Length: 281
Image 1 (cartoon, rainbow, N blue to C red):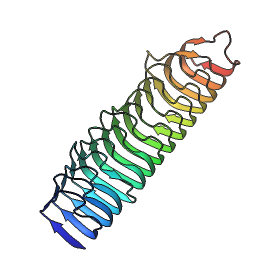
Image 2: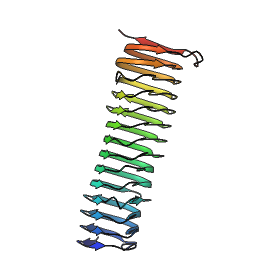
Image 3: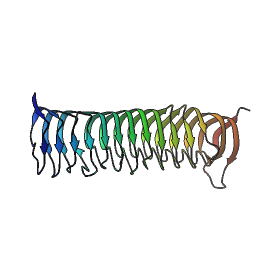
């Protein structure tokens, strides 16, 4: 492979069409679309300041790099990418891609990041600030995520999450086939309007969780005392809750077992009473 090392590039598309190339300690200073329509690229120890620097690049590896705030929308339409040990201060990265892997990556402006990704693997990633990361993405595997971005995982399919701490407003909305293990989820309106969602050994805080959804499973999960109005208009529930759940409201069907239940509320015109609710103590 050709090596390009210790160089700066600016202007419009200075590295257009390169392939079978290693970039080491380069700096993209300004301009737009520095690396575009390329394939089989490695990039190490480099900095990106210009706009849209990495579009239509297939089969690539990025390690120990930095993306400045001015490199917004930096990586789009690029399939088969691995990124490791990188810091990103720019919003709107990663759009319309297939087979993306991130490991030890910190994203400080996660606004509209990971949109329409098919095949996303994340390990030890941080997301900060911004709204709507993961929108419309599918086939996602996460092991180690810390996120305080708002509205995470909306309109997603086939999601598996391990060891996450998510602090948000609205998460896993209108999703299909989601399983979350050993995680903390803090925020209101968890998994509204979703299908086939499962949480195992998770802890929740926030109000009005798990409402208007179908086929919801909880295994050994815990709820913060402030959680109330849980399971409203939810169907096909199979929940095993450790400790106390403060309030259950208007569930439609299924089975809920908890160590202690504070109260169950059914409004006058709520749909049916086909949910078995059991308190163990």
